[in-house]
Length: 498
Image (cartoon, rainbow, N blue to C red; front, side, top):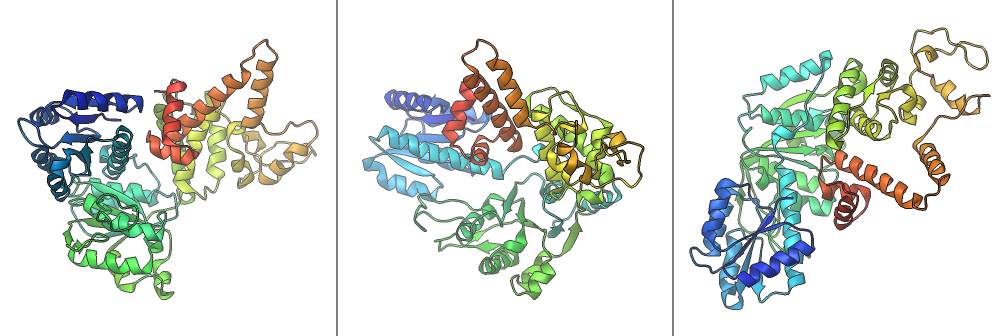
């Protein structure tokens, strides 16, 4: 995490805040004047949060706020002020301040406020994620080459695009590629899944809200349309958007104006919209749950993304790419995969498409015991869902009949179901059995720390996997694991995972 910058000419204020943030494991950096901050911004990256006094020699906090907001509109700025300056602090909100902190302040409340600002800052970072960090699009299959050609044809256009395809097929990657190769490439790319946000919160997420607009709205918040100004807004799963919000979206697409929740002044935005859905929108229109005029507004250019089962020839290339990617994220040696295991993958239907294959490669990077992945190392669902190859090969099963594909390590579904009960054949191994075997080995020694040792190893791999799945974002990883952000931070330090 980037440091929190504290600007105050009072050394005691700087000292107290520095020590409080250090106890909370939040990095900080101090300055005595606005001039020092502006000089640092020319040389260094912007901070996570800026906490500034309002009255300082060499430039006021409000002047600093104006200059910082002009360059970094998404950076939360907290203004510290004496009670006599409250009128100035209130006016600071009009300049985009996140919140004001009256002096003398309660230290615990000050830290709580800074933590809220950090969360807001990280939320903005996710929204404005650099395009250079976007995963690479791969594919040699004819269907994917058609998609690549379409992206090339649209490279100089700002036209609205509708991407259709099954969940997990990579619709957001296509949207990112369209943005990256468009005239708006230097602007932000902001993505929102309209199906993943409760209806009551979606309006605020899209259009933002004013302070006090509803219970819990403690500060003004920019919505996705404001965050994406000058760039591209990707609306995923647009078919699930509530009907009343579709009306508001149509108005924004028509003239570029909208109101924040609780606001009275129109906000102007210049955004290119790319929408995506796995649903049949024409059918949704017939059912009366999707506006026909919005459908036509979004459906200017349509791109269909093929499912992974329609491009099986890409599975080996994608698998090796994801194994390399997982190894880089976890800081380990990349695993290789045998031809037999690849053949097994090639027969799987992949209902979760490319996302399922990527997650499977994360799992294999963590769980496969050897450097070369064999069929026995693959997750159990692949055997159950496996489609039997058409050409039989000579391999006898336990009843003496020919079992197709065993010669290549590809058991058919029926054979797999009967495998645990077959005489002389051990059940397929799993990570639980591996854990039990490791525990047995340690318990056979004189050690008395088996619980702590195995728990630490288990937690390390679990946190590694969660961070890999969220591309290093700790707050998202904690949410997926069902633990608090303080817990994951403490565990990372305790386990030496920094």
